Image (cartoon, helix red, strand yellow):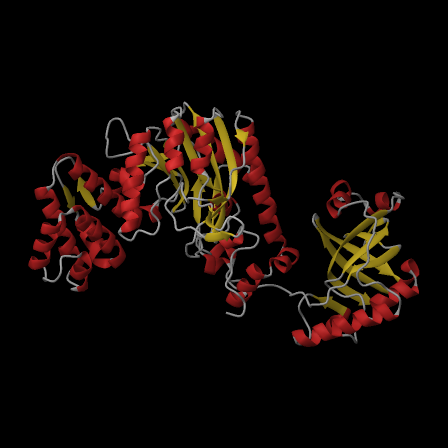
Length: 585
């Protein structure tokens, strides 16, 4: 009726203040009950999903539909409602899509139609309807309702759309509303489910056994991370939520389970960012008698298969800016993007090669380039890591001498840094001392560590297309096997795509004595203030002493992989219920 607001239409999120709308909806619910209509019923027969209705009949003509006597019973949430005298059109949505429902008074009867006419059935309500299919004058596939039943009353006004920073927060916090309001969001999580199923099928087909390992650990291990702590009352002991399943999965290799994988939830007590959520999903897999390089081809095969399955090709666009992605006023073609090329083989580079623009590294010296000095002078965090690592490698007497030369004070790196002297000069001076006074493997191990610092800060964000990076130092690889050719490096690779780590793999360390020394070094690092260093795991050493076959293992971040394959710029976009700060804090 043209006299009604919006021409008789009811759409999501329009109308009065939210509190007034809630009051209006509760009033409607009270009136429904007065008319003997259950607001929250049960036992509705649904013979077809909307996808099943639409699929084989999407292109049938009006005449073909009129000749089909089949009655379809469907159910879904009302997303749109327009009243026209003694008729109404509504659009309902279920898991498979949207379908228009045509409701006439002479079709469903006056008592039922009166619920629609009197605005007791509203947008957001869940209804069931049955009847034959037809096409409207505009050609839209429509169910002509012979019956209409309220299945569940919506007591809060659903939004018209989500946009803006505040509403993005609401989308993550009220994912249940986000899912039924935004089909693209629902499609993202359908794709995530298919990605996980594709991963599972891939490894099952290659003889891997899916296993489950504990999520509460007596000793946190398997990665460098700060754990969450809980307490078991009956045993009166602290436990740690799993930061990685690695050490348990490798115990299974000792036990003779030669190919295992786990799609696992991990928990790390770290910050929240577009790339990080304290609770996240990975797949970790281990294969006896394999080496790290064997997994390069396996990883390419797995991911290219998923890309091909989801996108039908190996080149995809990735819009990487979360603020742009959640700005409804910015057209999609104006958003910043990368075109990712997954064509095999993927690029391969060592840490030293990647760091070469910033430092010249060889057996006798490491010298910063102009770009390296500029980066150190520009970025305090990079300079602190670089300079701190140099100081850690220098004896106390050298630190005292350095302090005296560059500002005095107690022989600690904190005192040196507090002087706020030129960062590049301090780092270059400390580096010169290391070059002049350190020799042999100790010098090379330090150079490898410094190259890694430059790589981590300056190179990682530039690796857009799939790139395997190798040549990681022992100091940042406490569970990886040393390289036979270069003992201060490990047999390890990380896969980077879109400037972030997607996978991490290495030939496993199975020498219990070497592993014991690595654990001790980690304990010493923790004593010096490294909250993410691993503790000593005596039982894992005992397991290795029984003999673990040579093996390789890998972890792939499911959330980050899903971000890439669904064009989602934030990890919160691919986690159904991401961790959020309390609403009232």
